[in-house]
Image: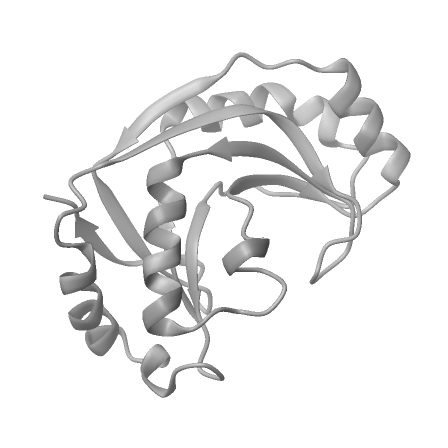
Length: 171
């Protein structure tokens, strides 16, 4: 499955590294940090599994998107996530630009139920699995300084190989 992701800056990786000792009580700690803009699901779109077709379909949709302003505002969690083990501890991302792009992509590629559309919560996953009390305790006692950045490109992520399969410059 492919997804469209916003690259996160090194400052986000450094923040995650700083938080690492406090995340060890969770079952899995995410080492690669990504910010999902849209999943491409073959159940919603037959052409969602072809990288060349996906790139060509995305190009016109990204015209006029020169950059995406983003802000990490704090820690939060999904106590019971839609998929996978919970809780999911994450960095909360605020971005009107990203929400606008997400809605546009959902109109063309469909909306993954319970994860996208009105349910979409931009975030960078840090860890998952374990006790909800550990997640809520961490969120309550650990404040983080906001991180702001402007993304000038997007990446098509290939979940099979867990790597960026293509870069899409904005501009």
